[in-house]
Length: 191
Image 1: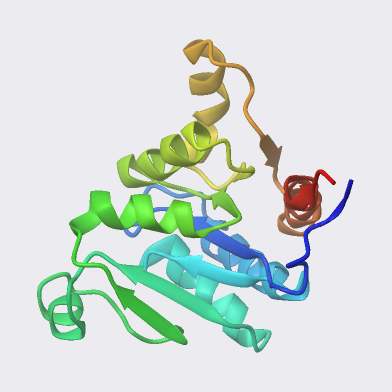
Image 2 (image 1 turned 180 degrees about the vertical axis):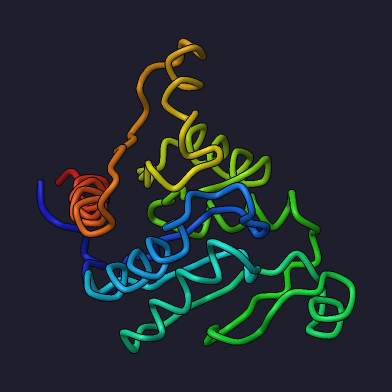
């Protein structure tokens, strides 16, 4: 086995989490920023739902490290993104306007990434997690941030579908180290 012939491509790490963060742990947004910084330090591209809250703060951290960020919007146009969905356009280098509302956007977001990292979240974050789980993607859960990040391990255990390719970790750097290792294992091709 050897590395993929496309090993020059940067890994795409999706950051999933709550747009509304009142229920998150007090340090969740700072951890989101550090997560974004670590994505860039690991020479990857941050992908998110072009939204507010936890994913937004991860994008801020990525941009502080001069990284590249891609947002996938539920809206069909920039105008709809801003006016109907009330979503930001800053801290993004590129926004893909999917026009598929939240559920379609969630599917495209997780499918476009090499791995998905879950932070403090709600139902939409859980939706992105289950898509990534069903697709057998590497998943990182930043525990200690609140919301769905704190119940995913129990959901997986009670679902009787195996452990998945999931890393549970409270430290953003350690989480990224482990996720990159999982992605690299996925990228090895049989010869």
